[in-house]
Length: 227
Image (cartoon, rainbow, N blue to C red; front, side, top):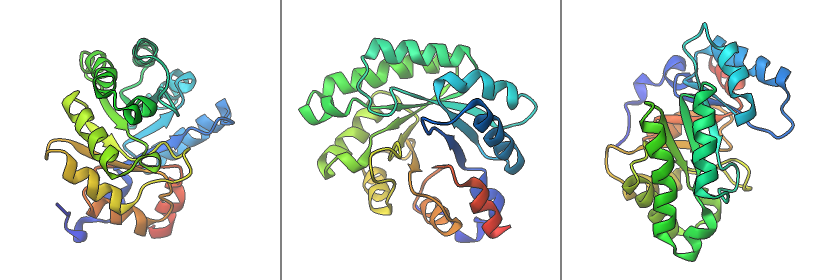
């Protein structure tokens, strides 16, 4: 399910970006600077750490850029109750989209019921508020079978997107993984590639492969490269 390459102009690609500001050392001033960049280029969202959601929401109140945040980040190992609380607090602070990390260890253990319920609980509180959920499966840590299983569990739990990576596991998105993920879920499940996307050529390849969102901190470089 590839998109017509003729539509991949700058605005199309940039409008699919979730501009990431997730490094542990990112300060308030860094967040404000990156929000300005996000607003300038008209990305889909700026993805910040939970502690920065309110700051980003205030900084972007006059723009169309949404505020997204991460849940259970980056390892996915907090309890379900903690993830739900984190999600609710983030939404109360202004988050309009949530990127949650699956419990990777439980997936590898084979406790699929736990993983499904973990996702479902977050999805439930998010959808009550009209907030979408992207499920990060962390492809760098999974074999083929676990990648497929993670995608299926996210779909069964009612998530809106499956997402490749946190960007903190040593390896980001690959076209091979996007192909695997697309084949594992139905047409209504959307895909997000994240990690290692630094050029327009890379971004366009992922869009052509079927991704509807791209996670990157290189928005300005991508935009200027083709501007």
